[in-house]
Amino acid sequence: MTDSNLAFRPAFQLSALIVSKQLSPVELTELYLQRIDELDSQLNSYLTLDRDGAMKAAEEAEQAVIRGDDLGPLHGLPISIKDLELTKGIRTTSGSLAYKDRIPDEDTIVVERVRAAGAIVLGKTNTSEFGHIGTNENRLGDACRNPWNIEYTSGASSGGAAASVAAGITSIAQG
Image 1 (cartoon, rainbow, N blue to C red):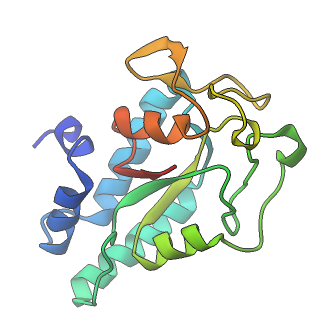
Image 2: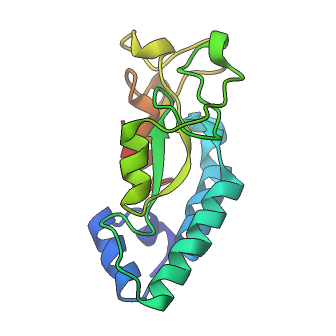
């Protein structure tokens, strides 16, 4: 199976491969981080990556699989989180210059539940400022681009999430 085929597999199939020990959460996370490095400079789907945190979580997820622990429904799946959600220890800007350096001390309930389900947070996806406009633009940098035609933005506040899945640079996104 090629990396490209793996990157575009549905999350439920990736999950089954992880649970059956045919796919390593570490290898899957490395694949998505590599694809982000290759593609996201054109797309701007991520505002913040948590490369170290994602790799640490992937290693922990892999050990849980090896031990035969009870696994959550998202166990070992890399996920992107929309930058409107607070993430403990990961920059959360809400797409605004006013919060460009904010690093929360806690997760929102959505992020708590995603982590409890076993997902691996890759980073924060691009969003319009406070999610208030119909295009994915803010003053933090270039707009998030549509993977099928980079002349267009990818949509509104969940545009970064949508672009990350459509480009195969994450398996699942919260948006």
